[in-house]
Image (cartoon, rainbow, N blue to C red):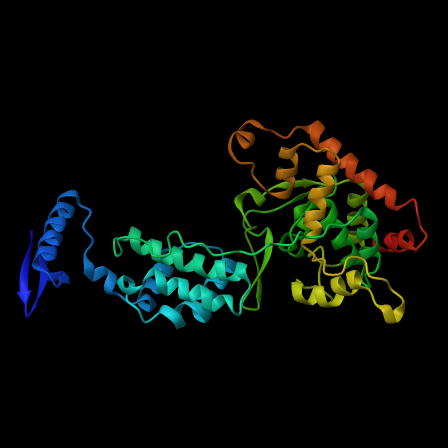
Length: 378
């Protein structure tokens, strides 16, 4: 039961907690306000909804480690979270107790970050802060999340480019290392993510049936804080078998017969390669071109990940059912569509035949030497 005590000219609401200690819930200028709050506390105690004010007096810097100890996320996600905390959240709000973090603090933080970060980055930072404060609400340290309802403009996201089969063939043909060209072809004709390709091992290829298996435990290469390691793919739905068109099965078979490495697409020294190195050395020069050497650009500004967009676009153009598209890319259709849709062998056959036909169109025109170079890739 709560009661009111006069302290000088003000009135404080006191109560005895379940551990026997007496604490102050709040302080008011008017006795009437204090009496109302005391009655509210009695109702909350009866309904088991009372929030002990002491729990929210912990500073944000002390609450974050508690939250981290039980929150589950992938290593790369943790790296992003900790970067947002270290660079943006804790310097601005870390000294404040949880109960003292107000909506205006968060809106001010968003405005300040917006002066030097992209809108999407600002939204990501506020999302992490909201997740941390929501956990404090669930832990009954806060009555509500002050981030709730705050809208952060994400800006207009430009549409990512996608390539034609001929453009993909040309990008692959420009690679100095044949394995890099084959990696690019595999990305475009399977829709695999960078980590899935860079971490791919021989044991995950079945060239007899022409398929790649994305392993649930070591199906992707991750890079966190400069360290490379194999781990789970992005989502549970990313664990999948990916069937290959005939030409790609043949190219991979030829490549592996000549390679001494267990890694399918290794770096120059036979180990896993870093995305940044690959982009600088192989990808960017190929798509940007080199005017000094008379090499025209193909799709300046295109990212390696855009090959995944490219693959999706090809499947749509070829009329592949949505469920077959989703399974191939490691996605899950939401709602009834995902529950009642199933991939059949005829769907897979049509999909592979369509990809095979795309490849064959690139072999009919050798005006720029593309076919000759592609044959060297394998």
